Image (cartoon, rainbow, N blue to C red; front, side, top):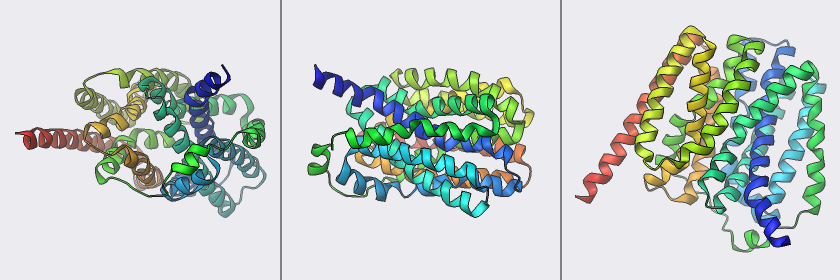
Length: 349
């Protein structure tokens, strides 16, 4: 019975917890920016800075897991992010915050990579979808703490420090250490899929700056709650190619008009499908014959767009830049899916 409970914990609870809390620590600072008086351009740099750190995960993750195991990577990463949250509250110097945000990105990449790997071992599309849905849950918790605690929101980060205790109590995953090869691999095909498919998640980071924190909190509560359901159930659709294309069309159209008009109901539609698409991207990668070992590193490398997108759209008219970027990436993703799937058909003839 003990082994059964441990297996259930590792397969479901820990992956979802790991992705959710690490997403919360990455996102809550976006709401906290309201209380830091720095130029807008520097704010956008701080929003995107963690994705510089996340991009080096393909190097740090296999090295660390080979030494302490998957579960300890999750516990230690989240506990460390809690400490960083407190440090962010104590000092508002830009250089100091920039360093902390990059370190947060490294820890985020470690925790989410470990969470995805654990979820993948369950071989359940629902568990994988719910784990990826931790991004939506993290946003919801961040918005709730911002609404409830205001400028003191970062201090609540002290609570998950107890996970550091779990680090020492958790057993080292010996099977992961003995049999894991420290090898860095990625796929250009998967890299392009994630670069284009993650655009909605990354462009939504600028929403509090664009429509105001109060409206962003309201949008977050509704849209991210519904998007979590999309994370869980969209992967169950059997025709991955058709569902990816249809969802991309909805994302492109709703995102374009949402940024042009700044209508909350359009942002809700855009958020639900834009985030729900994330749960399909790993499955789409497999459909296009990407080696499973290359999906994780490719996804983390694609995270560099999380840094470039907020900075790019800030140059000029934010509304129009965001609208055109969202529409363009959707069209490119649809074109790439059609090209690759048609190429597979021709190769079989």
